[in-house]
Length: 164
Image (cartoon, rainbow, N blue to C red; front, side):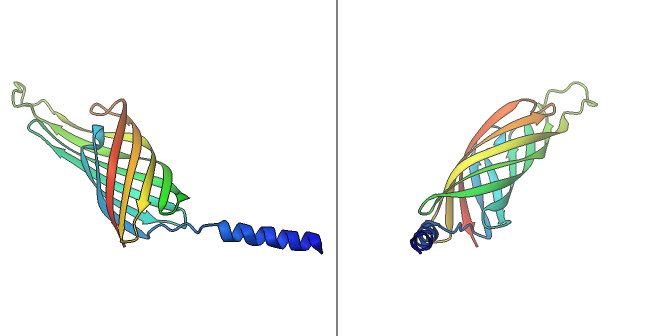
């Protein structure tokens, strides 16, 4: 009887300390970073379960000499830290397109545009406010394949998203 009571108390204690993972079903906002993340990205997150989600980001850049866009998709695992803090890891990839024009081409047949693909990882921390605001800071290494992005890039960004 003492063993049964001990296991019931132990089981009840484990349940009382367990925290349910709460991630928002949807989050939409901006991911502001640097490197080949193109500075600013429109970011959308969709919960796929209690602790998993899909993140899709569209980054673009327009300058005097080139225009580009990049579409990224990541599958993320979200784990609680303390209170409203979570940390997450993810993996995925994406594709992009660029159009380069320096204004000095002597050969009009020269095509200065192309596409590239890349694989990416993601690790970050986020704070889920009591209002529908989510702030995150993440690190995203990307390994690119193509003429425009053919090396390892590191992207660090701040995310500001509205949850609904």
